[in-house]
Amino acid sequence: GTDPLRRNSMEKAGAKTRDFTFYSPKNQAMVRVHSKFARDYAKHLEEQSWVEAYEPGKALELERLPHINPVGIRKLYFQTPWCSDFYIRCADGRTEVRELVSSASLQQLAMVEKLELSRRYWTAMEVGWKVVLV
Image (cartoon, rainbow, N blue to C red; front, side, top):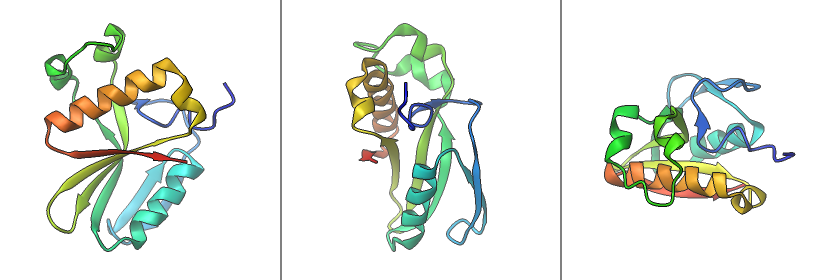
C-alpha cells in the first residue's frame, strides 16, 4: 500500500523503518520514532503539561497476549511481537497509550484487528487507550 503509516500503528517489533532521533526534554534522553507522524506527535507530547514522560514503540508482552479475548482477531496476531506507538506517563499518575493511524488504514481489516488487539491488551492492564488520526 501507499499508506505512510502502514508500518507504524501497532507495528511488528523490529520492523525495518526509517528512524527519526531527537532529544526529548520530557524524557531527558534521546528518543527514536519510526515516522514523521510519530515525530510530530512526540513534539506535541513535549508541549503538553499533562504528559510527564513517554515511550515510543512500547512492546506488548507476548506472554500476556493469550489472556486477551481472541474473538474477531486472527490467531497469528497473538504470536507476533507488537509495539504500540506511544506509552505515556501522565502528570497525575495515570498511564495512556496512543496509536497513530491514518483514516485510510482504518479501511483495512488487518489494521482494525491490530488496533483492537492493542485496545484489549492495554485496557486489561488498566491503561487509557486512544487512536490518534493523522
